[in-house]
Length: 485
Image (cartoon, rainbow, N blue to C red; front, side, top):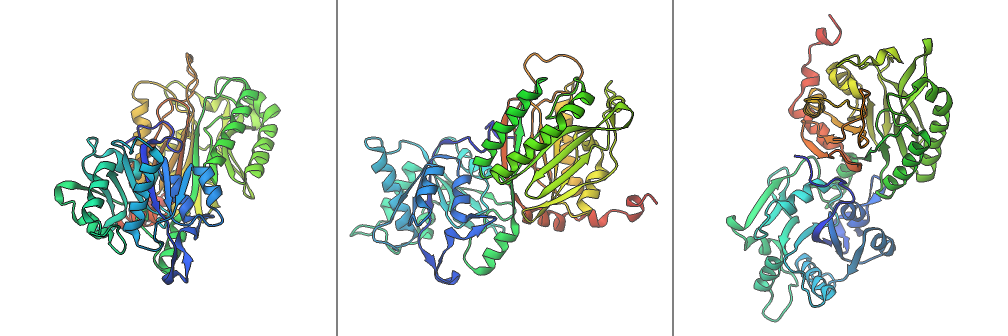
């Protein structure tokens, strides 16, 4: 289902996250598991940026990166006392910190996300689901792994109940040293616990070197989908791009995807924009990519024969210099894109962060063969810049088509649409919003409404692999159909 949040990365809810991040692991050679690097950042940082809480408490040593993590994620580091007294004691220390920090207010009826700092593939939308499942706030909601085992360190607790259950199992002489989390969860009973199944590798933790290798293999790039208003004023659009890339960079994005026709909207002089402004736009994207250390995908226009243009999606940054020319032109619903735009011919993929990404543009979404062809070229996900035309039923069509193309190809589909300007008139496509992240089995992972916003997703490559094992449509597809025989 679509998220209630218009900006999935920046949105928080009135909740507290307690993240257990204590100490070294003998099975990992004495290394602090929470500081192991996964796709360029530590496991702990990945958990911090996934937690949609307005307060974050890390129970564990701050180490060399603690001050930076605390500043970047609004977190506080505390230590259990005595040290190494077990995860239940660490959790109790986090709960104690809530009361100490709140002063006279002991936290009220807020919910607490209990998380492990060595679970680097947790998904923000899953954690939001845990927090929102029980509105009355009387039961615990926890994630289960792919073997239906309860994840003690991925659960949403009503704070009041967490305090009560901790008090009930505290040692007679005080404290929780050497008591297990299993004992805490064992008190809940069937009526006190709700579970949700995990997807992909989100329930994985880092107990062994094999776990670490699997997590690194599953962790794809962090992608930000930028839903923006594209104005008639090109200078204004360039400034919007500059600001939005900076914002995406602050989320830790490896890649930011802008809509189709980001340079200038349909209904303007596309040839003039292509000849006079594309080069500057391309230079800006390269400059911003270099400054922020990421890659950028955006819709532009480049000159073509016979006075037309190519509707071109360009990729710049991270040593990428890729152009995709829209293949299928929007000669439908009374529009005639082919009068001003020449079609492209080539399927395009590129590699980033251990994943292969395909490109398509807007009307391409209606042609399943393009998406299955990209999947057969190894794409794990397809990026789809969009300027969707408004009209009766068009919103429903967009969502249906995005989900269908994901199922056709068993890969993720990430669409970035324009937000329509207020009071816009005319027939030129100016977007309807509704940018979305679709999982490889057609699940709507995240979605915006009509307003401007930023969707941020960490690609889970294991989810794509699992989808293709369970639904092998690419392998089962007829060679005769594929080859036109």
